[in-house]
Image (cartoon, rainbow, N blue to C red; front, side):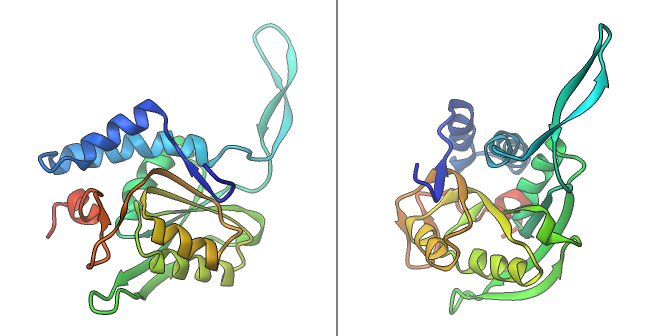
Length: 210
């Protein structure tokens, strides 16, 4: 773990990730595991949220109890695979505002092409958590963070399932102020820009497409 990257090594996270990596894990199981693991990762990525107190009544007596301070945080899914992480995090933080960044990877150049962008208002006053299962080349992630910053976001965190060293380096170079939370840092990228050993294409495995 470094200041820029938090590698979540919790046994439940690692066990579920191993099941997701396996070739014979079904689409339904993959989707369910992603939902479960995203909730565990959400616990880590929301660590350090600003807190305040609110006066409440318990069955025994009133008290000043801790609550999260500030505007509702924003969850931004980098389409389409980001939706798998988004669903689980939303179950944990149902009041969060939700945005979407549509990017696809040009398979020839490996560069991201934008086709959709819709995010909540007042991003400058919210913690923004961008979610995408795979941090591979880092090109799409960097492009998404670029767009979020242009929309006013100042406090951004990036949540992914797998990261490659190349993607971490690219993100750190472009956005050193955006901490990364991941369940695994894999070996490298192959010649097609896929994470190795990885788990294949997260979107295809989640939605049952090829």
